Image (tube, rainbow, N blue to C red):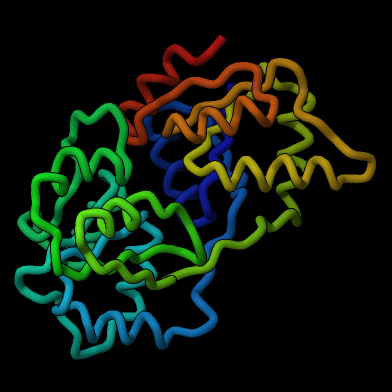
Length: 258
């Protein structure tokens, strides 16, 4: 059984290596490209205005990596500004960017799931947001739930796009890997951490010549209930929900979905 890691290329390579170190056969088939924004000026401006915010919330590790990659040379993280994280991967990226644990707010390590809803319930809901400013760092679009919730509680919320999402690269070796997975679904297990990656896959299959479809018995692991729902709608017959950390992933792979 081989795990197909669908994260963007750099992350997929790291996951393949990490899974291999635990005896798991894995291969990278990135189903999303992460690109720098066409205009970096909004990110520069956001860095210059960081101190005006009570919270700067990062939707993902990619948001952190690209935001910090464009940090002006003289910029520093202001005292008293919280860095919001959706979970362990985003927190690790923030720590790599130089932030301390005291500067980061994140869901508890034993949370059932890692997302903005959990962060709100556990860490943010009890705070008074009236008259405060919040910056949300994300890609080109995304969910509005946390922004809407903060606005309902009196905060002024702004967005900045630190990266762009793009269609995956379907040049070699992607077609061969896809063909192998479609031909032998029982021997492959797709790992999804993004609903958009699933959408890219199904769109590619539908526009192939001739059109292709997921075979009966296609199996997947999903790191969030929303992603699991998308995978089922796409035609995966078996979808197992798994926490996004490596240890949880390896444990799940020891008893994969049937």
